[in-house]
Image (cartoon, rainbow, N blue to C red; front, side, top):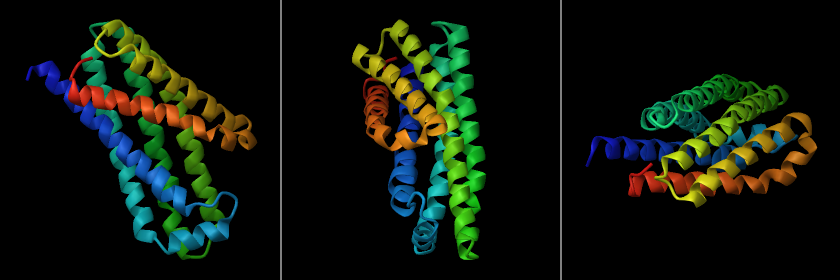
Amino acid sequence: MTHSATLIRLAGLAYLVIILCGVWAEGVVRGSLVTPGDASATADAIRAALGLFRASLLADATMALADITLAVLFFTLLRHIQPVLALLAMVLRLVQAGLIGASLIALAAVPGLVTSGDDSLALTFIGLHATGYDIGLIFFAVNCGLMAVLLSRSGGVPRVIVYGIAAAGAVYLTGSILRLLAPELAAGFAPAYLIPLVAESALCLWLLIRARI
């Protein structure tokens, strides 16, 4: 295996960690425990599964670490194509990882709040985390657009995956803007997030299996 192939597969592995940790923490754990707008039901569910909720925090922290790793690996692999675009893409992904990490501070306070009976405040902190996550996805959306350009120029990734990454960026940007400016419309847009899941999973598998970029 060449040095480049090793780095590409490491990038694929980091992407896999991001996808698995992110989907499990946000989609499986918090998706099953958090009832939007219902502080009492949310707090009851978290109190009944405190260990699981805390594990989701560790999964999110692991995801952020993998995101930082992937940002550096992609820059290393793509900087020869367009150094400025590759650097900007890395910085945007790092900003997203930083915002996700910072947002975890709010989420980490939730177990203590529900244990002490501050249900409404716990739901507020969950909302703060979600807002920070959505703001982070704005930066990641632009990263996706830049990555689509870089991957298109590199010629090593199938066009359908490249277009999928570009579409993922559009979904992330639209979804975050809706959550910030028109939250009443966000729920109806939620099914569109299947596009990023499919596109990023496809890129992850391509990197792991084919080791081309």
